[in-house]
Length: 110
Image (cartoon, rainbow, N blue to C red):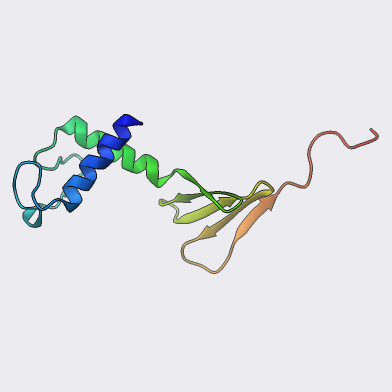
């Protein structure tokens, strides 16, 4: 948890601070063009930790109402779980798909 907070703090610093880690203006930052590139002023291991925390957060479950939800950015779906089942809704499209648990175990009287 502590590493995730550190990574998040570094990411926020890089995104919102008026000066970057190495003292260069953020407005003059270069855009990363490859997944192997590391922003100036960060160690490769620090950048990998930031990317790992970001990726984990993109797929995390979050409490909502009486259940949970998770986003799948790769498929662009939102999945919601309510204790009875789940529904899946794509970001683009006017439809929802889901399943609901009707029962489990042995039938009564068997």
